[in-house]
Image 1 (cartoon, rainbow, N blue to C red):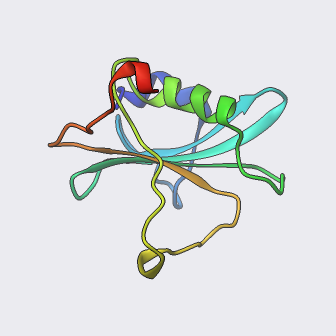
Image 2: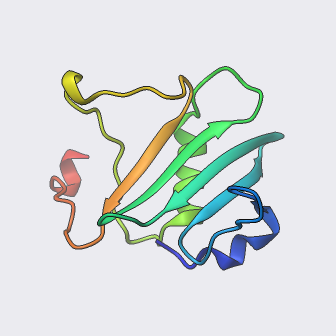
Length: 115
């Protein structure tokens, strides 16, 4: 994950008086005339970004998630969206998507010609 201090102009309070640090925080980011609410964290061995659009009842689109990925992760970092097994599925916000990256492991990827 990038050092997120470069996004400080978009930071909002995560909790009363708490703004976060270089890898944690809440952000309100304008993209294509919409405000994206992004929460970034790096705990328990994972870098994680959750994304939803403020006052819009739909999930972010692929190109919007790509812009968020570019803002929060380095170009050469591989991150993933997960579809967990049904028994582990939790939906706290119907229109939120997540990006995940393990800190101590490399995400395997298929050969580029297959992608």
